[in-house]
Length: 192
Image (cartoon, helix red, strand yellow):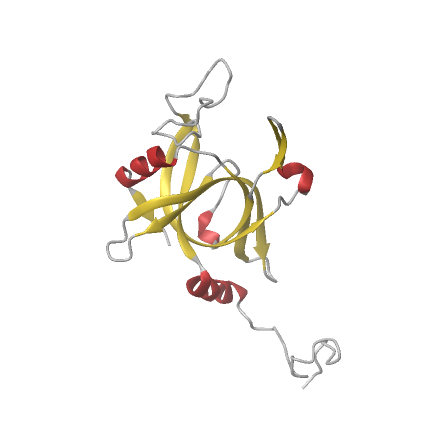
């Protein structure tokens, strides 16, 4: 058997005949998510259909972000349940991208990284809503955080097959009780 390109002195935990050939990274990632992920609500925008709250003078969604129909996106939305693994972090663009000017100075906005299966098909500007679910009924209990997707990176294995998406986003300050009430009424499509 040919020797592995891995040097035992660098990775002594790998056997000399170790090979990743034949390893299905997509399957391994899905197993990882099943063991360590949690369900979120993904708010997907349809940028072809504007919401009634759209401000045509500013050519932007309503500035108060409180529209119950579009969740502040300015577009028609659909709600989907997806499995995700999250990590809190700084921005992929560096510290300067996470600093925001506010009175009386600058503060660091919390950012997140989320890892998702390929069926997500994310777009910048969509939203990730972390929620608590009722274990018995599967109903939404409360919102814990909402993030707007800013950066997307698709991870592929040899041959170009998509393995997973990495999403970065910034936490939004929202009226949680109002959003919770709306999410409890709206239908969340179970995708994953």
